[in-house]
Length: 222
Image (cartoon, rainbow, N blue to C red):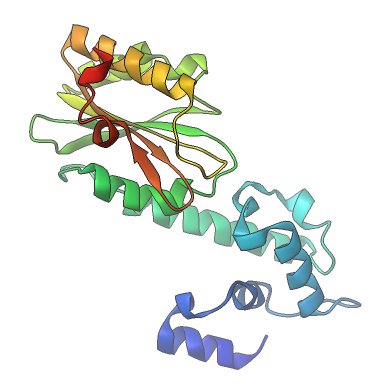
């Protein structure tokens, strides 16, 4: 791995490096019988723009030429490190939440995920965040994504309202019929128990969809 890559990171930040150069920094050097260029090319061919890399395991990584146990462990540690940093950069307790800022912060975190994640952001009467609640992994149709799970927790923490969020692994943000049906169900339950659903936001790779923005609020579900 060329020392000038280290110098460029110090001078300009890691964002100045290309995808291939980031791989080179993490992998550091080639292996016997395999050049660094070959390993990087194989990784980029399998994970274009890093898509799907956050779901790999060591066994899969070690099928790539030039990647053994130590390199696989290093890549997995870097992926997990980035995930934890990104998770902590999401809106924290006590901050006022807006859909725009929330979506901007969640796109890098969820936009490239190969799995569907459902989250609920529980808010107080001033729209300040009380809790980020993981609801389900795998889709809105799972039993765990039922309103009773979310609203039970909302009542426990005395939330006045919430924002429902989930990502589309396809990257496209237009809602499906299932998305529309689930939103309607959450709005109706929220009306009954006094916890308002302010919005349902769909996160894509580079964009997001806000039900409230597209329909001038969620009154159309009532």
